[in-house]
Image 1 (cartoon, one colour):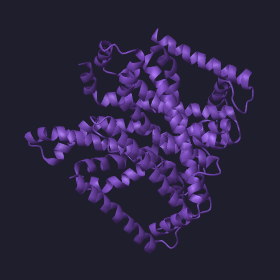
Image 2 (image 1 turned 180 degrees about the vertical axis):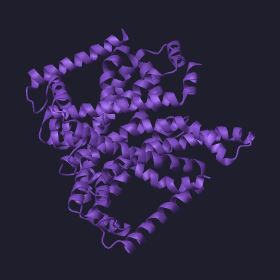
Image 3 (image 1 turned 135 degrees about the vertical axis):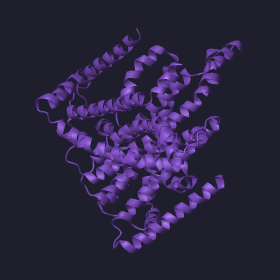
Image 4 (image 1 turned 120 degrees about the vertical axis):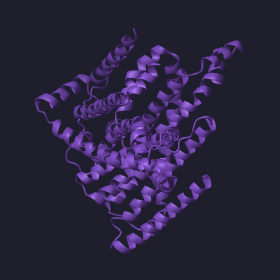
Length: 252
Length: 253
């Protein structure tokens, strides 16, 4: 029963969309039927296969940006959690960078890194780094408050305390940060590829928008949606695998 | 403790600005890559004196305010219904979840095609982004209400209308404001992107104009203004959150 209403909602919505597109609006510049979108998506995936270059171009930007963000965000987050001095000096700059709409930096980064992949990776990086950093920071702070005493009573040295207790215990927080970063990273990809790109999913959407090619526009939007959900689910699975004790706690 | 943090923060900003000024003056020959803070300040002064800045700032703020306020009204209303009625929740959920998981930017070309390049399309962008975030959070707040409070309202013989106004909505308020906080950042991003793409005024337009004419000081002025807008709106909402939900450990970011 529970699933039925959901399915009905999806089916009903799609039918409504089809009816709107075909009988009410009847203008392929404004709206096309979901059937047309699915057909176009099938064609781009399996017949002409011209979606793949865009997909790969976007993937590499996303991948490098995300990796860099993790490499910078996690250690800086840890440092800020462990040293109030570092935190106080970095915090104001971080607040400024984090709360500014990222698009504002895009032209500046373009100026600095050129229109090649460098500036695009930088834009994705800027989007991903803060959720990762902030989560690592909070994770390490919570963990270091809770577990340092335990480590002390076992007479662990600083290094071993970090490796054996603090690092593993903050893994769930880091993973949660990575999960949040996926969505922001995808937005970053779309922003990055809009400036001076010749391929990629973002380019595809903007090009389709400018040439009023509705089927391709919808395919692009749908691919973004699918990627967002997949990335989120993927990291959720990793989180469950990496932190089996969380499941046990919930079961209790 | 708090005071020391504040002092260090100010010191950090001041030191950073001085370092920025000195380095750019010493190392860079022109202002194209990074203009020193003083030329950014001069550009800001010049632009605001000419009245150009006010027009763009006003346009963006107006679009943002219109979209945000309608999104609050609609988002809270629909979110309330989603929280109260299971069937409505299940009806809306697949679509809301889909809308929420697609990057904001991907919708902007579509919204511009549908609603034109003027004011209206930007309001729609802000509305779409904020409404979804508020709706999801309001629904969660209404669902998670403490059953004891509902029993209390029953024993007080409150009418359904009073229960909503006096118990359910106030209980959901912290959630609602969290939704607003999540919506604000994304909505600001959305409105700037929409202005960059197609507009003749607004900060996004200014950003594009500055980058296309290679006017770096102007570009940085826009970035600074956007940063101020971002921090301002974020700070306001955080204040609201602390006031409405003081029991929560307030997030620093």
